[in-house]
Every structure is written in structure tokens, then in C-alpha cells.
Length: 211
Image 1 (cartoon, one colour):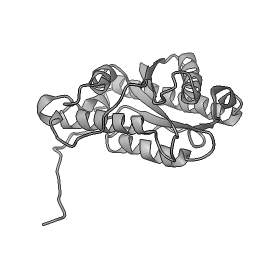
Image 2 (cartoon, helix red, strand yellow):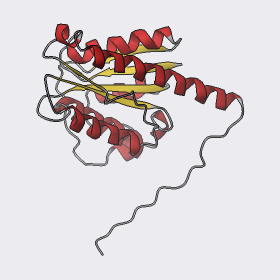
Image 3 (cartoon, helix red, strand yellow):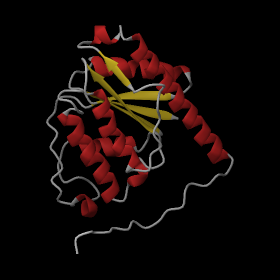
Image 4 (cartoon, helix red, strand yellow):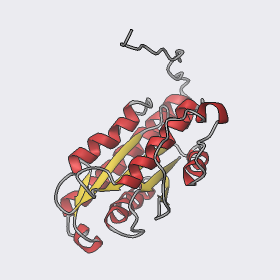
């Protein structure tokens, strides 16, 4: 079992990374493999709402989002981390995840995320974390992904990595989140071995309210 840890910060080893490293350490202690994916500093275009992904099977924009979708298929769970830059998830994360989740759904590859557990974490100097978590959790609820929680909101505080290391409560919650993720994955694996079937699929229905 393998969990992808998504670092949505342009800082490779900043505050968000520090929180993810605490998660990575605990997952490994629980026997769960993990890997940190760096969004980096390359420009990420926003979704154009062109719906070409439904025909092409991938996003029409040629950047690392398509590579991420291919890569994500090999993972059993996801933890997405974002810094708070302006009272919500940073712009790069929003543009990236909008396109990644939309493309997976429209291209018929929703299985990449569906029924796989997801969690969100946020880092901030002071505030904006709860709004960020609310925003990120919506990617999971629209994709049939069980949401994994910690014991408190999944956030750490600090203006730099050294300060995050002083947020003992925040780091503790990262460890609790990691253990809850590991427990869910092990339960899912046990259920599959016991022959419990996946939920029945239904054809997607659309209802427009403007007549």
C-alpha cells in the first residue's frame, strides 16, 4: 500500500513539506509506503472549461498535470498539502487540482481517485487554514473519496520550517492523521480479501435547473 503526499508549496522544503515529512515518517512506521510529490515552481494554467479532456482522455494543456494523473494511478491514498497564501489554498494548488480531478472524471478515469482515501493539510503563519481545508476537502467529496481526519483540524503554523517544528500540537495531529490513514487502508485491504464488493456504479445523471 502506498500513499502520495502532495506538496503544493513552491518551497521545496518549507512549512508544508515539514508537515508532510512528519506524516511520511509515521506512515512508514505503520508499514505504509509513501512518496512526496513536489508541485514545484513551474507555471500551472487554470482550467479553460473547454471539455477537451472528455475526448482526448487527458487535459489539452501541456504541463505536469497530465503526468501527475498518470502517476497518481499507482497510489492507494492521497494527502494533499497546501500553504495559505491569501486566506485559501495557494493559486498553484487550486489550478492544479481543479484540472487533475476534472480531467480524471471527464476522461472516464475517475477510478484514479474514487474510493481511495484522501486527506488535506494546510500550513499558515496564522490564519486561513480552516478555509483552505474546506476548499481541499471538496475535491474528495465530489470524487467518492473517504476523507481521513486527525484529532483536530489538519494544520500546522509557522512562517518557516523551523517554526513548524515548534508547533507540537500540529505535528502530533499529523501523526494521528497518518495513523488513521494507515488504519483505513489496512481495513480496506482486509475487506477486499474478505470478498466485500466495491459500491455499485450508476450512470452519471445531470439536472439543469434553468429551463
